[in-house]
Image (cartoon, rainbow, N blue to C red; front, side, top):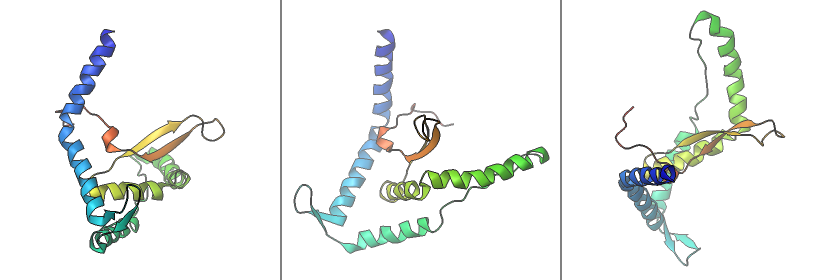
Length: 151
């Protein structure tokens, strides 16, 4: 049981260090909801102001018009062929993973909270059991890191 107790202590330490960020993200989301929409009922909202929505929509559109495209450079002359292959493969992988949709949801987070987080995962059940890389949005409220680490 000492390993479990140590893990619980470590997690509580990480949660405590992240409290300010957690509170800020929750407050930002509530502010956005209250400024952008007025609650009619628990599940139904009506627009309260078009200004905030339009401001964020314009910024979001700018971001979506400049989705990054992968390009792999060779580190040395012998890597040229591998770099060219990867430069052709990565756009296909991003398309397969619906990267524009992930990029869009990350930008919504960035506009509301100032940051967003991507996750690159291995899904062993994808591609009929062969496995495949997945790129997904990660909720920053589900991430924990060691406090005080700068590198």
